[in-house]
Image (cartoon, rainbow, N blue to C red; front, top):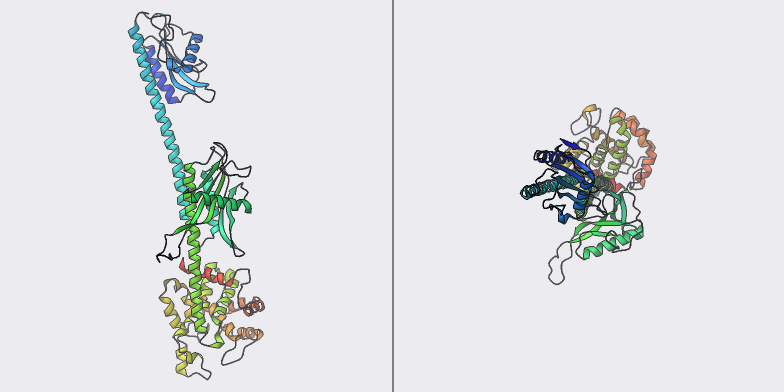
Length: 551
């Protein structure tokens, strides 16, 4: 019966060896599986005779040490050897102290002149070892493929995660940090960082914007990284790889760096037309950032597989950064166009210059102070700001002479002038992204007592946006010089609003406005409303507000 003493083999391999040993014992021979020291890992015996342990150990040891003598008789003093051996698992390791041999003991009762049976058993053992070795290699290959597939799957999940998080309204730093964190989940490194090109004090510099782990990069190192990466790119390389694993570094690095990978984030740049031909030259790549990682943890160096993954991640990051830049340009173009349009309307009347921007600013002020009570989020506040900015856009359809008339208006002229909210709403209705701000433009002259225009809406019939913009419009009109009256003081304007609570103005909204720091608001308006009551640039706020419409 098979007797398992110890094993360094897998369960399936032990089972295969037991079956083979069992078949050999049926032929009247013993079968042993031994390690380098001759210790039997598996011993299958017929029970008819005993195998000498010392002799078995020597044969196994010699077989593994001299594999060229495998499958040959191990006792040259006889015409037929008692023992037949072969290497099952070759010696491995630096000291070659691991390996497995298989031995057949023909026993004392074998007819020593029967060489044919010995040769048959030798061939049988050789065929079995070849089959066993092929099976083991297949399993190793399957394990390797399985590991590679698992790694590839994780890499695909990483790239999918990065690509699906490309929200252009998200700051660059948030997205790039997510990329770093996700990359370190599947690639073991001591430290990783992303450096992005920024303009600081009118100078272009690479600034650390995201990172994970332990990595120390100062200004000097940043310059070295960029120059050395550019040198590799000029040689046609896609990344900078350097290591002391196979010898000395190509470049000199700080002592704590043993291997490093630097991958560029690139942007395509248009070149100027050639002076010789007049034709544009091909787009060229410009480095706008660097993905840097140091000291691979689970293997001695960064390899080509790492380079491909890091390049893919860097490409996604570069696309995001570039799209965000282009989106920023689009927002600035859009808000610039809107402001140019509103200024052209304001310019029709010297008394209303800057009125639209101020109403947008005051509308934002009111909305922010009302946000908690009304549950307004930042996107809604930004849309209210835009409604205030564009509230008078319909005046583009009103005759300039009527807008600037100094005398009393006729009933017909009043009716014509009161059409500007409807005209503005019609203009914006043709722009899909602007439809959410139409209620503010259309209803900013409605009154809660129903005496407003164009529809004579009452109370809650008037949209919140229309009530806010209407209050902002009146406050600026009161505190600005008009053709038909002088400027009101802030105190008088506040008193006027208090007197019109519940008639012209919504009591709740106007009360919130009156409780706010109106004197501070007034100071900001006198400064040209350049800054909000934080540190954000007002122009940037306009671009952010546009972002809510075109995303």
